[in-house]
Image 1 (cartoon, rainbow, N blue to C red):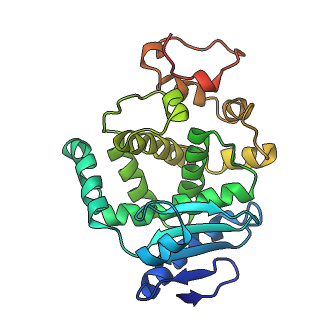
Image 2 (image 1 turned 180 degrees about the vertical axis):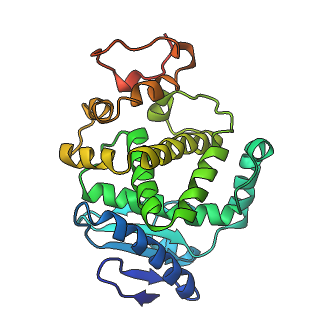
Image 3 (image 1 turned 90 degrees about the vertical axis):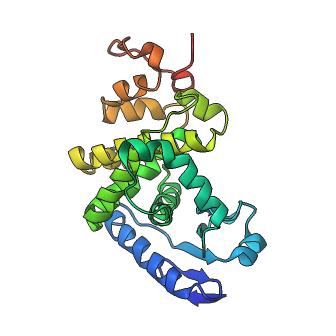
Amino acid sequence: MQALPHPDLPTQASEGSVLRARAMQGYLLELRSALEVYRPIPSIHLMVLNLEDWNARARNPYGFAFQRTSPSGGLFVFLPARYPERLLWRLREALLPAAKQAGMPGKVEEFLDLNLGHEYAHAVAVAWGLRTRVRWVDEFLANYLWLLALSRTNPDFFRLARAWGRTLTHLTPTNPQLGSYERKKPGFADQLWFQGRFTTLAAELAEKHADRLLRGLLEAAPLKRSTVHKVLVGLEPGFKQWFAEFSPSKQKAALPDGQAMDWENLGQEG
């Protein structure tokens, strides 16, 4: 293992992965520069690991980047030194229906690298009291922090992330309801479709309203599972229509002003 010291993003890299680790460290530090103006961000550790080093430190399947909080509160982001071919083929196969309709914005390896910013944003959300343990909320907010930072630091990457989001929305989910996303882990294609929807909305909010949502969320932090849907709608009334889009049978039924929404049942039948 080799160390790439940095006070804000200390990085560890498996043998032969130093150049990749340095490039990804630079990418995440750019995101940090855009986000730390809102609130201090503690050090977040980046781990760029080969299969052997990964298995010695994590139980997650090798291939997908992920964020982890240690028992002592340390924040870590894990990235594979190399993506397994079986993962790349699985991803290409899952994306094929969407690619036929919307095209592929780039290589799947680039898509996975770009999404490391999403995992970094999860760590920032934990540090800022924005993690709710509501799966879809946490995934959406990570996308929002990531896209907001990209819009400030790298417009080309912002456009690329948005393009990938649009492509993913052309997949056909087996169950497009937010309630299903919360109750059980969705299948691979469904996860991609949901991420596409979250990314697309996050990019739209970042473009149209800049950091308005983030400032409101930080004022409301720490966010609570029981009230987060009210906070979101209060800050961005457009969330009402967005929620309705996940419930095809109810899209035409508008919510009366002031009516409380039960996010746990959003999109459920009956």
